[in-house]
Length: 248
Image 1: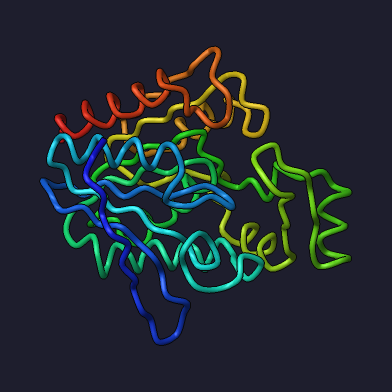
Image 2: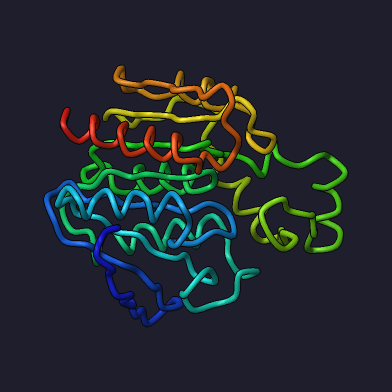
């Protein structure tokens, strides 16, 4: 186990305060971006932080507004707002070059953050990355219900039911990325389980083809699910990150 890092808070005058844990070490700083309704204390974030502690690597993990230990209400969250949170972390805490590691929706946030700070992001790692899921992740009836009722509640296999608001869905539609080339030119690694019921693995193979970068590798785990949190999955994640950092 790595040594524990006490939580800190980024106070902001015009937005909710963000909780984060920043581990000093050799850069580029690894920045973990959680998925929808997840937080910085998830299995993958913890495993990557423990790896960083063992190897003296800089690591930053944080909670979006309304999530985990951060201030705000979850239902007020949007793709735009959570992207702003990620960029604020890059600007105020993870100064210098970074490698973004995004899980599920965190992959979408990471790609938007890389577009906002292209001079800072050296590499990108997606774990079942789910850009544009407001488009392909809802049926037409569900989209109409969101627009009509202002919110949609769906059961989740990972905890309490998930609430999707009209503001979140509309923000997602305004920040879609899969309609054209993605200009990021650094190394990209996309990990995806082929038994993922939530984000089918073909989304990663499609995403891989959109990057301007030629250094893109898609790693499919035949028996892997959406979480990719088994010991062998975590070993794949940390090994992929280690190899990527060595190449930078």
